[in-house]
Length: 313
Image 1 (cartoon, one colour):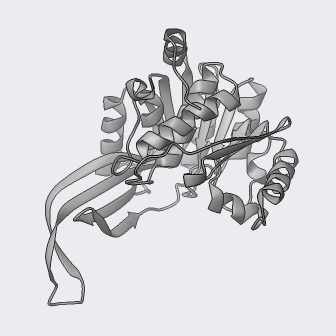
Image 2: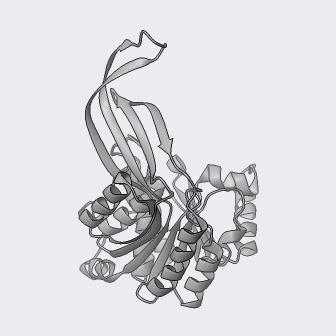
């Protein structure tokens, strides 16, 4: 089922105000050619010819939401270093209002990918959990930012930036905001009472175990949704599309058939599109159709990419 955006929809999207909170990172790419094996070790030698930098993690969610036209703010922790300043520059270029805490004891999380002939050869991660003080400052700032937004997205990459997510969800719900969570890990109790969580298949399996068939999946997903007091659970299923579990039952949408080039960051695109649509007043089932369309477009692009309003139209 295709979905079309009206002029009124686009105006509502542009008025939607979103706060993204979570693990902010910088994705770096080194592209080159490899024609020989190193004499020092049995590894390819890559002659780097160009590089690229993109926003990653929660910053990629913010960038995706901004590219769909909404007004976006981001709260997170970065290091007082060159990658941290680069993240702030890139956010500013995307029109995202940044409220990033700078922690001098922390290196900004960087994922460096070396790519040769369209193949990723290695990924190097630079990361460290933020300090307790930086996180407490963030919690205070979160309270003050809540008043001016319609929806909050928590983007959890398990890097320690969402230590206080339970209190943040409580505050956001008390303020009447739509709360979306992209979860991590095997303990979802910290996301209790969120409006919607968006795990993929392997993330959900980690929490509810393997399911035998669709009926078993539905039973497990609904039990988790009720236990966590969620309004909805959106399961993203790659080539199988998406399933939305609510008190009214389950709704499925098929994946948009297209050539898959790169799935990195597709989950960020899905939750960002979902959040903007819900902040604009769309019901979850309708928002899922648009998020599915956005996810289908973004997997046809290399690296963490975004989808524009024009492409969604």
